[in-house]
Length: 73
Image (cartoon, rainbow, N blue to C red; front, side, top):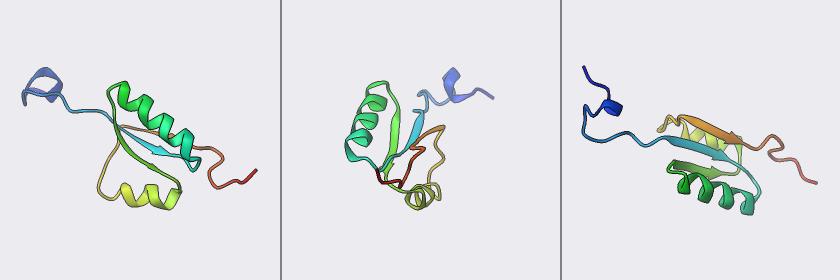
């Protein structure tokens, strides 16, 4: 059995990255940079609960998470 990356289906599966970031401008920049690098971006979302909701239907290959999510300065 051939894997998709070896041409089994005729097209390679796009890598998906989840973005969880509550700062709007940072989220927009992350999404643009990841899309430009060829990733399919899931989100961005601004909370852990919104991220969990997305994970019911999607299984990203990686995630970029805000370590200070919800912390106001």
